[in-house]
Image (cartoon, rainbow, N blue to C red):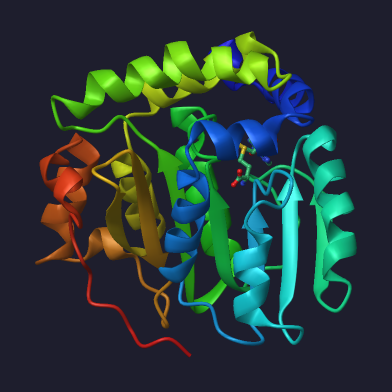
Length: 278
Ligand SMILES: C[S@@+](CC[C@H](N)C(=O)[O-])C[C@H]1O[C@@H](n2cnc3c(N)ncnc32)[C@H](O)[C@@H]1O
């Protein structure tokens, strides 16, 4: 595995970023990070009382949107590998005294959460630093911890496909963000890494493919002209392996695995017939 995806490298990277992450993230995205979080959480269809896992939670940047939707009756488990990041999340806990929130140090690939214990799992901007060969392990873990009918919604920064937007976006991410990161008291080398991960990541298509392989019904989603992409996936109510289905699902699954994601920048790649949410 490339060293930049190793647990040690990521822990150091995010520990170092923890102090400046919130402000750099918000200001360099012109507030889009906020808007993206709200949009991808809306797609998860959270309801009052839901048990939700915020996987790779960072400093709890998504909590204001999650907790508003699940209310004090809901339960939020937030997990991250970086002590620096989840220390920030622990500090944020004090703002939400009336809610049931627990912050756990751990690995998204082996959460330690009980099987079928979560109604929803949310993954905000944590996919790009996961080694491609570990995506299937993540999909299996998500499948394991979700209840039947449960939904995972994930979002990640991605290279937009539009020929005019792509070079501008990548130039901004790789050249300008590190400078702004330094001005906002972060380490520019760390913020440069985010551009490198995003360039390698190439969108959520292959992740959606792994989710289907794991048994999910999945949709690929585009946010703001493909500057971010996402996956919304549902664990079927009864146990079945969607990757073995014939008809509609298999061709779309094959296309996603081949990286045929041309429709991505205009929106949804594919919608699978989804059972109703409980
Ligand atoms: C770019 S930050 C995103 C934080 C937050 N979710 C947000 O919306 O801004 C990625 C986070 O994922 C965490 N992370 C990366 N790989 C992980 C893994 N395998 N297990 C748990 N956390 C991980 C990092 O520590 C970091 O806090």
